[in-house]
Image (cartoon, rainbow, N blue to C red; front, side, top):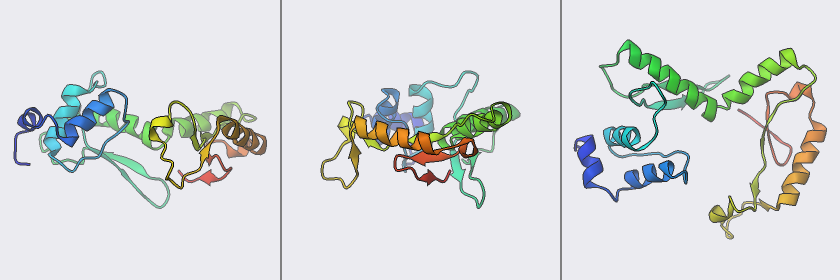
Length: 182
């Protein structure tokens, strides 16, 4: 782990890190966790994955739990050379991360809809594990997880849609009709 980041990527082409970055690039994974060389992770992400326009370098980010609302903290790495421009880039990265990881798109849109469309209802919904071509590679028959048919998933969704009201706008629900805390 004392190697230079680029050298680590070049010399360990079969490493789990390089393979995980390739899975993300090929849209076979959405995220990864690494306990390896942080510099190599950042270099691999920068060189092999699409960057956000206008952002010239990556930043580490974490979700910090709190009693009321979790938040995203970016630039948690040890980088003493950040410029004001890098901090703006970190804010862009953090906003994108929060939008995905904390469902900020639903929360933000819910606030607007409560103001402008008070009779409308906007929720986030997790349909459960549905047997479909998309989920087939991930299904494990030995798992205790309940696997729903598309018909069952649709029925559960319709039950929930009949039960929710505009006061539920901005909330997150599962296929069993239970609220999921953000």
